[in-house]
Length: 369
Image (tube, rainbow, N blue to C red; front, top):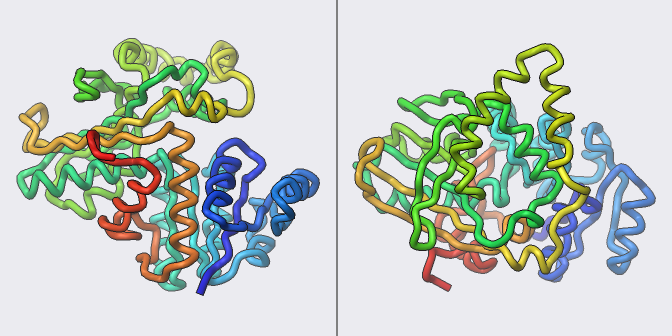
């Protein structure tokens, strides 16, 4: 049995990339959104795709669109604001759910609120199934497997090569700006702790060089300890701008203090508004100039010699997100073998299937094609 794929957010930048990938796979998703004219026009431009008018804040309306076995794909954020009603509607209906969030707090809340319900209805729920954070989960799993039970510490770093000055979307720039003042979750002493973003800097081996990266959040800290309970510490880092990692650590301390002052958040937003840039994101030519690199290092102790290192390479941040979400939607719509619940990519599909799917879209270990 094949379920329908319902794409919410196709008129936005990330949603358009997911749509393009679905169409290249020969699929005809139902386009959904609240702006009737925009959704209808987009459907018409692509040969008259089915479409529906849905408000992300209206679960009852969404339940009229998705049913058991269908796949709801959403790129509509911020997910703390818009994601919960959508996810609840999917879980109640027994529909599968995929989103593009990078908000780890949102993923944690979904697990607490909906994991049991999703298991009962057969809904496979895959939050953060894009560049955030499938590559890190895959690399971290491989490193932990190869290191064996001696591994206690797992560090994961996200990097990119190529020019990023024009290679980041407005949404990514906004998320980075706002994230500097928000805490980042890490696993420490077998428990989740919140620390200041960029409070720590760590060096990783990337393309034959050591590159710095700063502390950020990632769903790896939620999912990997469940599969590898011997892990004592899991930390995620961002190294898009290695030379700025230490200055950003200082900047985050200043910004974190500033937003606590009266009017501090408003002043910081005004000062940083020029950094946000215009709407949209990099086109195909710009995306082709950048590559994704993700590194996972497993060790027996903090700062200890690596027991295992895994380096993944793949297409650009945005191309990878579009392809990953489309692959998962296609798989869920045509196969009934995924594990229900709010689950990790490896738990949902199994390690072998996830690796094959990632390889299909070009995310492979360094040196492999």
